[in-house]
Length: 295
Image (cartoon, rainbow, N blue to C red):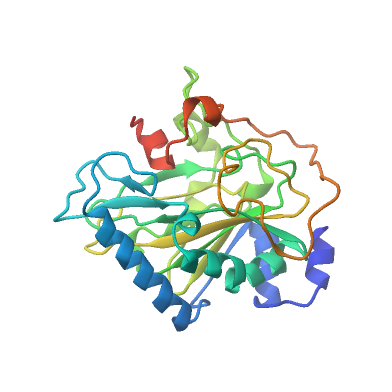
């Protein structure tokens, strides 16, 4: 749907001004949108996974662990695809307020794409370098967005996510290094072309949400505070935005219609998109592993 058509539809959960700002800036933050009853359920199951991680060493499909993770001091970078591992996450992603947000910004027909839970652990939880999302998982058009909810209060010193306003309307950058290795972040030599000083950092009380377009440049510094910063993220697309790669093909709920109807026609944006490596051959690592050059 065209922007004006989406905005002409009655809002389901967002204020009209928030919707207009999303299309103008490529992102929004809304304070305390997710109600307490959802936060309670999400935090309970998330705590269970933290406890489970204590017994994990090395590779595990559920977890991306920091190198110094131990049973006594768990340090989780990411819970991978949480909707595949617990029904509460999927219930929230498919029937919770995220769906209303997605409909308000994508139109009536919306698909779920994937999810992750980034912990940004306390005392140095790793930075996420400046990047754009869509080069990781290209679609036939750019009506793709990611919605996040902070599961706890996030103050300025807890490394909230920053987004560069208007960058969704700018160029897509090359996320390969000059020697051809996928890094998943903008090259240092490209950063002067981006107005990083204008970045807006989206924190807030528990239940606050972040929404950013798949072309928006975003990132976050290390979390040097004494508290982790869990951010549950779900990506959605318009029904006529079709994935080009098979990154999420094995996901239990990938491309599930969460509102409206499936598309009969794919819609193509004429602007080109960088292709990532063949994840089927190379294997996908988390953004942290790619950006830090970890195996």
